[in-house]
Image 1 (tube, one colour):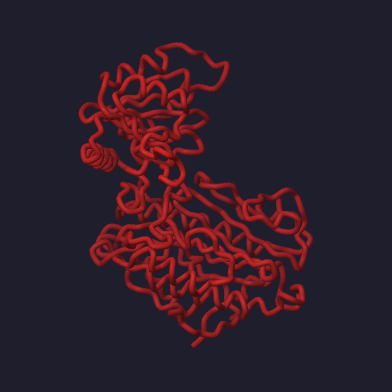
Image 2 (cartoon, rainbow, N blue to C red):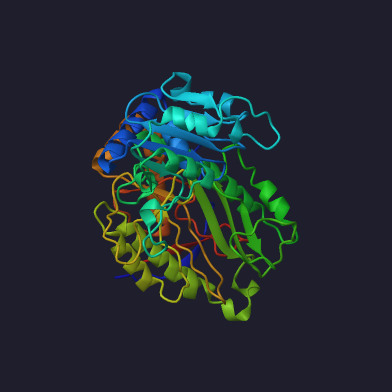
Length: 462
């Protein structure tokens, strides 16, 4: 049952628990361990080979498997049960494949596939068909990994519905006895290899969350009536980490959440949602461009008590459910009850990685459990025609005692900052967190309903 606590505003700066040290990139040994997991999963699925596709928009699975993400071009890695995987890359990507320690060491063989290059560039060397024939013996059962798998209610034959480019699908089908969609091998919320993270990946996720949260904080405190949305985003000082999604800034005539800045000027009394998302993090906030309720339309002036308060109480419930073993359907039912009428349409929480949304164990009737190692985005988006929205979207990891102990041993600075964030959520925001929930961003627990007064934070009070 939802807790029943009142909400109030306090005057307080947003917390700053220090800058994380730059975590190490995946090592050769780490990538070799991932490849071993891939081959175990292939064997369990009865696959003789796996073709992992990637492009600029859909790089996550290929990056996780190879340590390489394509820039400008497409790429394809073919994994067999034995031997070095073959990574096909275009003219400009081929030298960049050396960024992967697995490629640099020869664990993965990178070759030129000029057809993956941009139009009008040189087309020397072997073509795609010849390279696929070289990599794959005729026959067998091949799985493909792109960025999505399908459900039976979507397509008639989901096992054989491929989301990779049709040219590659045709070539693979011409080479194999059967080609199946194996994207779930990486992305399924219950069994996917990327549905849980390692202790080193927690450190990388924390760094990404810090970078995104620091940028969003700078943007929030720079907001001024009359400034352009361009100026607001410039004030964020976004760092160099790759973006997982477009920076959004939706207000005024563009209230839709995915809108970006266009040069519009900020006006008092309008709704606003905005985000900064890096690989492994997406920090988002929503509220009103106002200093207090008097700046809101008359019908929305009880925004704090009628909308923000119930949302905060629901998010306290959400946090309490982030424990290993809790069925995803239980989380969904709790949020449906707590936020009935709040216009929440998407899953109340999902897995996050290099791709902003991997998948989610949280959906109606889900028996998939919350598991230790899940990197979970508190992505619960209410929407109301009068009150607009509010948001406390940040990253968390669910960790059992063993994973927490490993984190303290291997990354003590990360563990110490997480402990400080947990204290803020408990002592200031008023949440009762289970030991298993690890907040990754300094913005966790921060809700500023009136964005022209960002130090006015909404908190639960006993």
